[in-house]
Image (tube, one colour):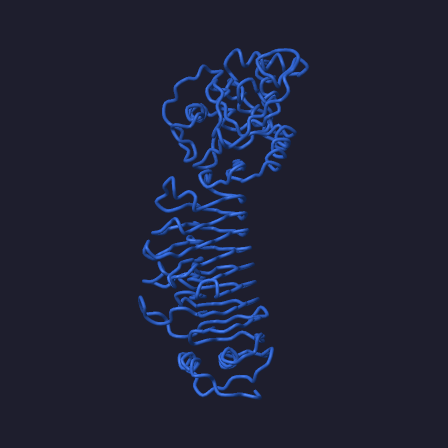
Amino acid sequence: MKGFKKLTAGFLGVVMALGVCGFTALAEGDTSTGIDSMEELTTALGGEAETLEIAGDINVTGMVSISRDVVINGNDHKLTFTGSDISGKGGGQNSFIQITGDVDVKINGLTIDGKNSVRHCINVFGNGEDTKVALDKVTMKNGGKIEDINRYGYGLVVNSADVTIKNVTTEENCGGINVDTAGGKKSTLTIESATIKESNSVKIENQNDETVDTEIEAKIEGGTFDGEVLIDTKNKTNVRLEITGGEFKDEVYVAEDEDESAKNIKITGGTFATDVENYLAEDLHLVKIDGEYVVMDENEYDEYLDNQRDSGRHSYSLKEGKTERDDEEEEPVVTPEPEEEEGPFSDVGKDNPNYDAIVEVYEKGWMAGIADGVFAPNGTLTRGMAVTILWNRAGQPEPASVAPFLDVTSDAWYAKAVAWAYENGITSGYGDTYGPDDFLTTEQFTRMNDIANGRTPEVYVGGAPYATRGWVAGLLVME
C-alpha cells in the first residue's frame, strides 16, 4: 500500500496488542478502501481517513481499538476473533471492539463474531455526551457467554456514552445490551430497531454510589426482545427508560420495584408478555389480545372497540351463572344502544332470532351475560365457556378430582366444569393442556352437547364456523 507514515505513539499499544509491529498508516484522505486483513484494518484505524471500507472477512487476534472519529462500512463482511480463549475472570481478551474518548463513530453493515472468546463484542467506554456511536445493520455473535464470566458479558456495553442502534441483532450465544455509567458521566441509549435473542435482553444499571450525580436515559422505539428488559440500579432516580414500541417476550420491570421506582419506566407503545400497567403513560389503554398485552392510544382503542362490536368477539368469561371478566382492566365492556323492547340484556332485542332462547337459558341459570345487562349474542364461544354452560345445565355436580391440565388452575372460574366434563368424556385437552380460551366451532359444541346428553355424536368432519353465544342458546332450548 502507498503513502504510509509511522503510527502515532498512542496507537502503538494497539498494534503491539495485535502482535503487529512496525506498520505505518495511510496518508491523510477521506476514504481507505479495500481493507481485508487485520494489518490493513489496524493501519487504517491509526490513520486519518474519515471512512474505512471493509472489502472482505477479517480474522483478528486482538482487541480492535477505536479512539477517533471514523465511519466503518462493513459491506456485509465479518470480523472474527481468532485470538486466545479466556481462561477465567479477568484473563484473556476483554472486549473485541473497544471505543473510547471524545469520538463520533459509525459502524454499518458488519458482523462481529467473538468466537466464544471475548467478554463483550462491543464496549463503548466514553466521556458522556461527547462520545457518540451509531450502529446500523450490525450483528453480534458469540460474545458474553464464556464460562466463569458470562454473568458480566454482553454483546454491547454502553458506559458514559451516547449510542444509537438500528437493525442490530444478537445471536448465537451472544449477550444482550448493558447500559451503565462506570465512566462517571451520562449514558444515553436509543434503540430504533433490534432483534435481541438473549435471556437478559437489556439491562440498565447505575453502579455508581448514590452520591455520584450520573444519569442514564434509554429509549426503545422498536424491535424484538426475547429476554428481560430490566432497570437494576442503586440510584433509581437518575435512570429513565421510555418504551414507544417493540415486542417484548419477557418481563419489563424495575428490580425490587417500589411505588416511587415505577416512574423510571414510561411506556407509550408496544406489545408485552406481562402486565405493564404500572409503567403505562397516562391516557393510554392496555388490552390483552391472544395472550399479549397491547398498548393503545385513544384512537387505536376506539378502533379496537369498533372491531369488537363488528366481529362479536370478546375475551370475557362466564363463571358459574355469574357475570365476570378475566381482568377488569384488560378488555372493554361493549354496551350497545338500549333496545326499545326491554329484556334482561340491552343488546338483545325482541327482533333477535334467539331472543326467547337467550331469555330462557338466562332464567334457568345455564348462561349469564358478559357484563351487567350485556349478553353478547354474537360473541364467540370458548372451550371454557362451553363446559361451564353444560355443567350449569347439569346442576353443577361436584367433580371427583381436579382437572389434569397445566393451564387449568384450581381457582379458575371454569376449573370444576372442565374437571367434570373431562371425567364424563365430554371433552379432552391437548395433551397436558386444555386451551380454555380457544374458540369452539358449532360442530365441536354439538358433539360435546350430544355426549353430555348421553347421545353418540356424529362422525367429526371439521370446517364448521365458530359457535356464537346466541346460537348456543338456541341449540340448548331445542333439546
